[in-house]
Amino acid sequence: MKPLLHHTVGILLATVVSVVAAKTALAQDPVKLEPNTYKVLLENDRVRVLEVRQKPGEKGLLHSHPAALVYPLSTSKAKFTSPDGKAVEVEIKAGQVVWNEAQAHAVETIGSTDTNMLEIELKK
Image (cartoon, rainbow, N blue to C red; front, side, top):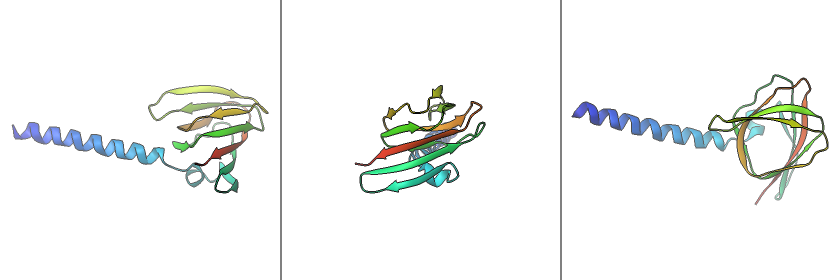
């Protein structure tokens, strides 16, 4: 009986650690995680404006954004992978304004051109 109890406690502890680690990863600021990709151009009490630059083949880390407006400066292709592992490939067209609800993802530029965009994150 004791081995079963220890096994169950071990699984429970591993689950709790995984959930805490996942929530910590989701709360990560892309500017702190990837300063070569994300640069703050403006920040005040209402918005934060980021310049995002990524070369073909570069893969970003899992991070999160609040609700934001995205304005691509170049046309590129990217793969967005959510925390649950689901991936979506998207063609990002220069000048196409996009609204994104708050989300967490990792981004990889999969096309042959650089990703270059402005991301305007809204604050509460």
